[in-house]
Image 1 (cartoon, rainbow, N blue to C red):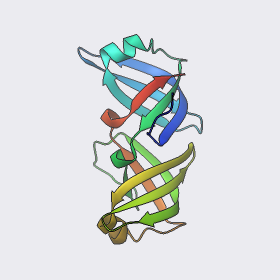
Image 2 (tube, helix red, strand yellow):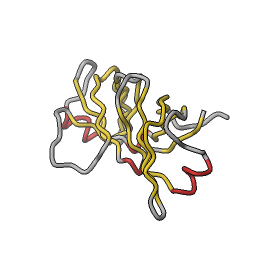
Image 3 (spheres, helix red, strand yellow):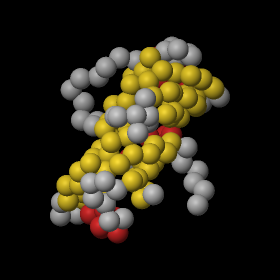
Amino acid sequence: MSLSIRNQLPGVVTAVTPGEVMATVRVRLTGGQDLTAAITREAAEDLRLAPGTAVRALVKSTEISLATAPVEGLSIRNRLPGTVQDVTSGDAMTSVHVTVEDGALTAAITKDAADDLALSPGTPVVALIKSTEVALAAT
């Protein structure tokens, strides 16, 4: 199956915490970073997620925010440090390619935000991803 979602990070489930409706799933990415996904409990059961299950974490590029410094006091669970590799700007939006320990990510942010952050190749950044914006595919 081909997907339009550019950001696909391989990893292994380390923990599943089921709730009434939702479950949180902790994934250890191949580069050693931990990622948390909040998915429906039904999806976690359908995928038979358990510690040791191989998965791909899927994140749309529009769901990744970037910071140029560590951010404190924020509820966003997933914070992946990286380095900007490439910046492509249009009239309204900018595509930012970031290398992280676990591979590469693409973030689609507004041109104004990219300009305000002065993003260019070599800029250190932190990719911020809400756990509710991480989908999982069993592999």
